[in-house]
Amino acid sequence: MIDPAPLIRVVNADRATLGLLQEWLGAAGYRVVDADTTQEAARLTIVDVPFTRHGGLELLRRVAAEDPGVPILALSPTFFSNVSCGGGCARALGVAGVLPKPLARDALLAAVDGLLRPAA
Image (cartoon, rainbow, N blue to C red; front, side, top):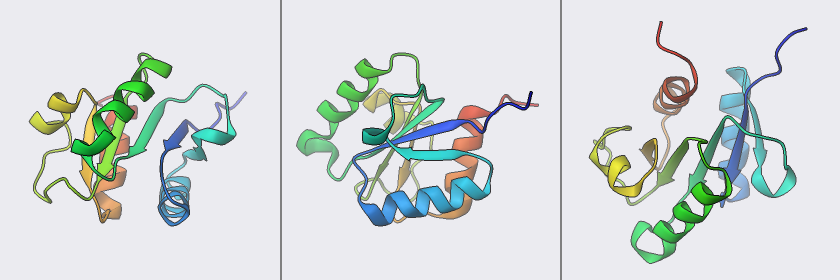
């Protein structure tokens, strides 16, 4: 039996961002769904955080509590473009990784692959 594509749940994303994530990550072999449409266990949760200082931390904490142990990748236009995915910003927010918006396809794929695929 072939393993299904790893499921990625997306929280708080607008339709355009969700569509982009589905297109880019789907082409890389992932299944991407809006968190509101599934109860299926995910391997990764992507959270779109418009403002980290205005409710964003509470959102990240709530999502982490709903799926303990599932890594979270936070996206936000408030992150600087030179922020390291798994660096200090991610640790301060209590997530596995962060990416600035607007998203760059290569950076997104590298971040997701790094969080989900074991190092060779």
